Length: 269
Length: 278
Ligand SMILES: Nc1ncnc2c1ncn2[C@@H]1O[C@H](COP(=O)(O)OP(=O)(O)OP(=O)(O)O)[C@@H](O)[C@H]1O
Ligand SMILES: [Mg+2]
Image (tube, rainbow over all chains, first blue to last red; front, side, top):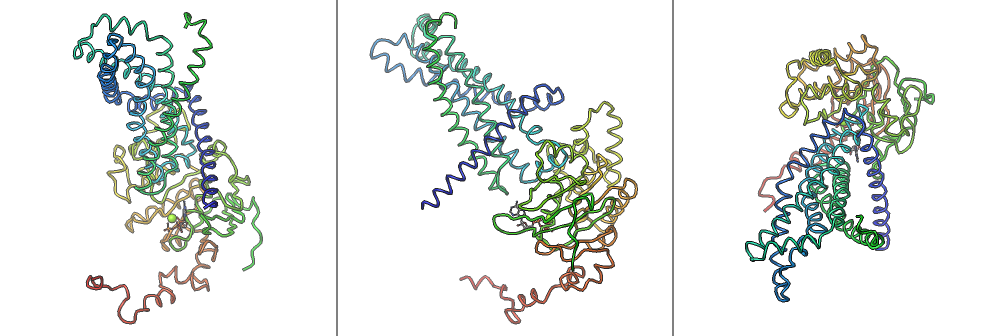
């Protein structure tokens, strides 16, 4: 029992160490590839696969989040006769938390799964060893462009999700629940601050980086065979999902602390 | 057989007391071998005896559990990836399972190492290079195919063309002729010899095919249970006194294996009929 526990602890520490080294190498090489025009075509290919093709699903996610928030909050607020203030609630929730988190989770499934499966298959068919054997660093060739594309595009996709979420909330509130459009917007505008938007988008960089790093790591370290690739995909998704939730919690705490300490200079933000 | 201990500069590639274990199972057991420059060394041995694992140590794709690997007198098994990258451009490695990049065409596969290491401005010259290398393995005209639409033997030949794309000093072939027809096999044998003569390339060839081992090998090394049990030229191996060696080169089954087959008397124990499971 205790032996088992000890072994698990050692294994976890070992894995964490290996993951940290992988993440460090990936981000280091990524920063360097930024200055090498030769790699731009590969980055663009990845951006297309990761970013452009994700737009529809991310927009759909955003739209439904906004719409469902409108339906849910209406009942609560109508009790107190506050239904005209719905806009603040919906838009703040969408922009600060739900838009970024749900868009990131959507990407963890769509993009992370594909990355792990692709790199995992390359690993079990020795293609990654082949890259290495020809004197090319597989992290630079395979991982860096993927992490970079994911890191740069997740914030953009979050903006899409936010916009459509706001629109979805608005459509349901105004056309279905018959709330005055002017009141809806003016309360929203007074409630949502620039700070909310900035933090929401800022999170995107970290979510994107985390998704790509975890997925690539799992692909690089997957076990042999079709089952190994399948397991790696599952682990990558669960890992990214957890990481997104944990990061989101940390950021909310940190950003709130920053916000409160800069409260006096708020008009400048 | 007594053997003088191998020194790090006895050959272009040297392993000293190389040992590799996977989760406790010993695959390579204290192998000391010096591979001479400009010669072709053939490694033979039964399936699963660790030939591929040994080859991967020569290019540091696998790290030893114990022991050292030297390339041109310098230790390589403890280098980091960046330092290895420079050294590996002098190698060509032809994988047993080809390991072609399946998202790239044959053309892109072969130009991969060139594009990675050089600034290519003259695309014509590159086309010419690809054409020439593919012609060597009889695959010219397949430039725009994807690996998925090639047969196993064709993939192997493209992998060979990719391995020699940068005119490496040292070429490691992992079973280059397995799965090829006799004529294409011989073309590959000729190719190995041609590369040796024209470019003074050092080759290490893993094979089960004794015909090609005798033909291309300046020296033949036999691995068995992770150890070297025979080491010498073709003549020496042909007349080697060891039973295991004789059985291997003549493709004869050993007494022990036969005894296992005979266990069940006249009827094989494994000859079950579906009724037995009712
Ligand atoms: N990554 C690994 N993890 C665990 N065991 C391994 C690994 N790679 C190889 N082995 C073991 O090492 C032994 C030797 O494998 P290797 O691939 O070198 O055989 P081989 O001599 O090339 O055989 P073949 O002629 O069939 O290709 C096998 O028993 C295999 O189980
Ligand atoms: Mg092998």
